[in-house]
Image (cartoon, rainbow, N blue to C red; front, side, top):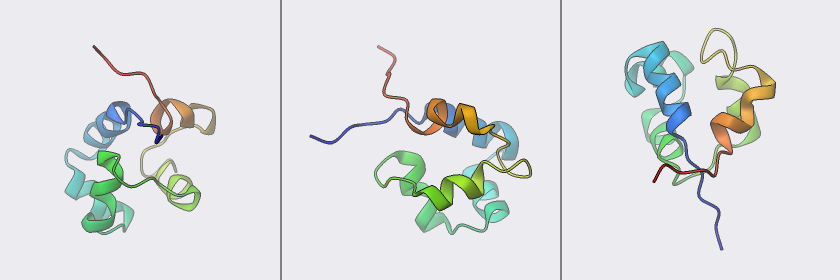
Length: 77
């Protein structure tokens, strides 16, 4: 059984910092075709991608908050 992750907080951070996923893709250097499935949760982020996008100049996510953004299994009802 696959685990589904709630990436709402991650997507919210993307919009908060960059306005659109397209602007974030450009700033991060990750192609939209590679980034969008990850933000939708259909393809998992690998550790190198997480390390790249949490940097201060991109999403500015402290390492201790990574689980909240990438591994949240709680869903709103």
